[in-house]
Image 1 (cartoon, helix red, strand yellow):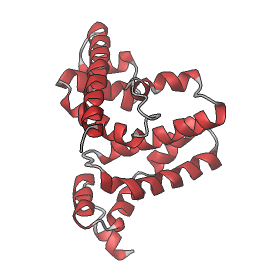
Image 2: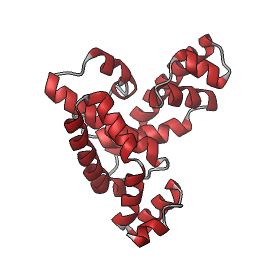
Image 3: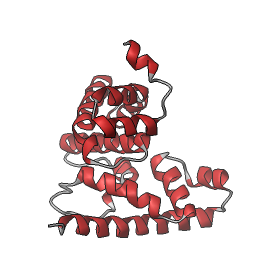
Amino acid sequence: MGATDKYRHLSDQELLAKFNQDHDNEWLGILLQRYTLLLLGVCMKYLQEEDEAKDAVQQVFLKVIQELHKYKVDYFKSWLYMVAKNHCLMKLREKNGKAPVSLTEKAELLQDTGTDTQELLQNDLTLNLMEESLQELNAEQKQCVTLFYLEKKSYQDVAEITGYNLLQVKSYIQNGKRNLKILIEKKLKEQTHKP
């Protein structure tokens, strides 16, 4: 365990860079350990059963270990959050036939990518493209969309954090979401038309 302790001080970006360099799962292990509580929190919030949430955390760990090398992830924490959230929403959908309304509303950002391309065969791909597309929004939209959807802040919270008024916040979120959808669809098309 000594080696792992030695690298604890590294930032997410540094650990990701090391993982991308040599694909050694030890780097991933450190990253995942760092966010175990965050993951458990996300899974508890959606699944509301401790055992189910713990199972989901394990499944998300496995998914990340299997999938991460396929993507260029810049912000591990928000990517991990989206993977966990998506996993929980899929679980709830399987259980209930469809997600409860409040979850459906919360998941609007993902659902509104509006792409049924093979039942979002590319759920992971879409998440990754969303991460990329988010970086392409203008600063105001990116900030408001991130706070509202990824950090679950209310319109009021976003207004207080950013200093924009409520009308501006709603406008940035709406336009940001629309632009995100356009960017993701464009990227999906480019992906599917690659030779």
